[in-house]
Image (cartoon, rainbow over all chains, first blue to last red; front, top):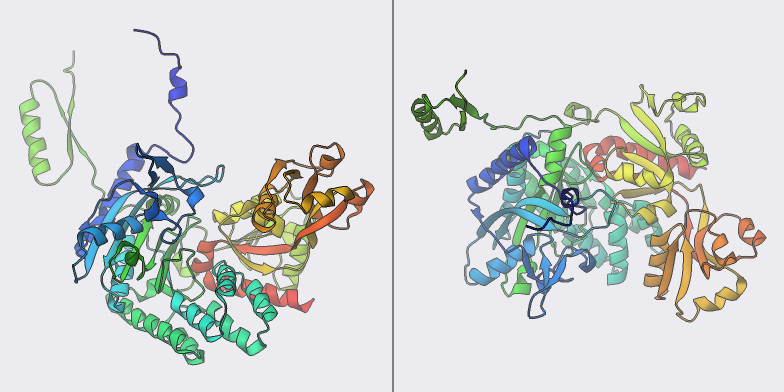
Length: 379
Length: 224
């Protein structure tokens, strides 16, 4: 055999943005993933697998969440442009439209897997990210909003994280205000960028330049108020002038009651200035935050128009948990992961094999993890 | 829920990343007017890296400007203060909450007077800058001019003089450095000033404290 040209050291590296996960870390991660998926299934969500890559159009500008240059693109033999999925929601929507076109009732899907984005170098960000999430398709009710948010809280609690907040917004409030004041789409877009990056002072300047008086500006910027209970919502409701925005607040109040009925009221707060950069979100949107990680651990919301791109007219909502951020938070907060079983080691020699095997089989029958380890007899 | 009953990592203090140098002094003056102080930070002989105010539960550290958005994005600091040039160039996922109204200057395209013509005809030109992202964004997305961008790490004015580049994109305070080297401002890209940025998670997890902090600093800015 010919000697390989490369030395083995060169083969040990992996590209930037991907990594090996092994040993104790992998065990912890699998356990957390199992806990999360178990909660999702308990709420009646069915596992769904979609392909790792799809046609480019599924993630195109109108539908997608990721700028085209951040997508991993490849070509097939026929010259089609393919894309490694940057997130699951468009794929799940496509799948639902294809196989459940005529289903009227709600569909509940859960998924887990990797999503890919070709982000810029040297920012220390992963390009392959593990995600787990749910989509609830064909149900536009506020109870559906409540269900996915409470499922998110339930799932997060079963990762062992207890200090977290789910921030909830409603894009409709902002749209209502813009409509009431007759903003052009361009103005709305600029304002949206400022407000979603919490640059309220630039937003106020912009409004001033557009010729809005003090009172109107205050009305606009009420969006920046922070609200952590129902009372605060009611206050904002009382000061809201237009019907669309009022309806948006009413929905949030009803949503709060539902979340409270689940017993999860203390995990949520409201933030009307949360306007996702993903334009497919249409109503209630939310993000989960905890300590020890710089980014949101979960994002989600309502996307009632997305399925229309695939020919099915159905309301939908869902969320996605960023597993890497969750694991980072768990590690930094020094959290013990619930439900993680130790492995029982059963040692045997040639003579005691039968006996050891019987014991291992019995343990495994009872759901206890057992491993057989051979020992050489002494001497 | 208040912030203190969470008891999780780093929840007790507000950590603030400052930009080393004059910007840090100006920031501390502003914070003092807003009622936030740090005596330890005033001690020039100290070799400490982290400065604490135990009464107000504040922690400060100094870093290079371009690193401030990085510390804030990753949550190593809840709040950061640095120039808007740096924030634009780094393009990190942080909330930009306040214009502090000092550290003012302009981001400009500069060069010899005759280079002005090159900016009018969508010509392919070479642009030297410490801020390649800002330069690229300006020429590609606002001027729609295709250019070659060369990243330099200092003394950018040298670029046109030794004919490495046709023009430069750089911050201009008084314009005297440009003038002494026979260069002039050709176009203004945007005004620059010091900004306060906030980590996205902190904005939600420490909402009350951070909102109060922003409001008090904003009042101090408006008082000037």
